Length: 189
Ligand code: ADP
Image (cartoon, rainbow, N blue to C red; front, side, top):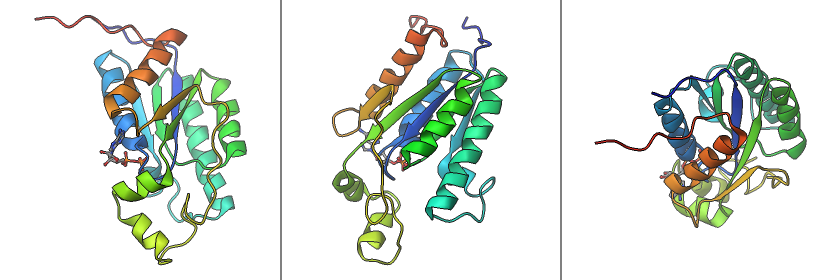
């Protein structure tokens, strides 16, 4: 039986809207639970309905949102949780601040969920790219707002080339390499 570990950590998925952060994050979280860890997922869209309700998409508000998520992630990491964050987090300096805060408590694994804006717009899961290209919404990351590509991500998951399961496997391999996740027991039966 998998045994819950005391070492908390944070997996931080960054990337454009529609790149696959939530999809991969759920796959990672499900596998971590299966291996007996205490998992908490902090999804940017959900956080904005609670912790960051009322914040907009200016640089200042985006930074405040990410700083709040980073702070919560660090507190949870401190208490041994496996934290999975899925948030666009477009600014490199702000991601670095989250990394610094979490790293005081446990490993921080940055995952660049990478897909070109054309592919995200083709998927357009939430119909937001069509609106952004039509100018109906503004300050949309990748269209008329910046996304600073990560330079220090531990994992790069190219979601054009990889299935969600393959991307999740890359993340889990990194967590196993760090020794914070028990290696999967072989399937039985
Ligand atoms: P984000 O959280 O980054 O905004 P979501 O996970 O909500 O992105 O949406 C990504 C969408 O793209 C989902 O509908 C997912 O099924 C789809 N998708 C297609 N191919 C992939 C892939 N290879 N990896 C991840 N998601 C993919």
